[in-house]
Image 1 (tube, helix red, strand yellow):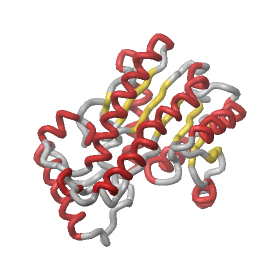
Image 2: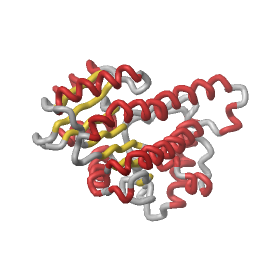
Image 3: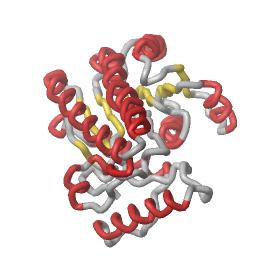
Length: 269
């Protein structure tokens, strides 16, 4: 009867994790969300009744400690799988290249601070709150969702000059994952940075500004150059979570600290 905590479970990939895991009644599934009232009606509409929803914010350490305490009451004290999916992304600055921040320094500064607070510090706060529970498990797996855009080799070969904040903070996060792995490996705890692939989460629609659409076109062209066999389409959340789950289950202590794709390697699409 494995137990799972999905951090950042209100929509997109996080909600898909809840949906798939809850399909097995043997699983204990817990979703951490900032606003439970936004998630509970969705679960009810999908006839999902075996998911525990706990209020927590990755930027609020006290809320995460409280959420871990609530999790203990549900699981009995141990946690098999911690999956940190929550993310902060500023759509105003995400498609700007470095020199386009001239005159927009306040935007860059606020985006960087918000990203650090959630995507870096928030992950550290989350792991530290839940690692006492993971220590009591026989499975002992912590997964942090990253992105292929944080791959230094890919960035060097790419023509994608935007996604400055998101890519750089996620790259820093991958180092944090490696540091946790170095500390926790003697305890048998696997810590993994995992890219979900290019996923259609419904965040971009037909009403996007022309300049944003143009930047997305550049990204797609670059991906096609590096992955000529790619069909040019994002995968759906169902497929991404299914593939992520397989990688998480298969990875062993010998690969702790790794940065892998949903394929279990360095192929990001």
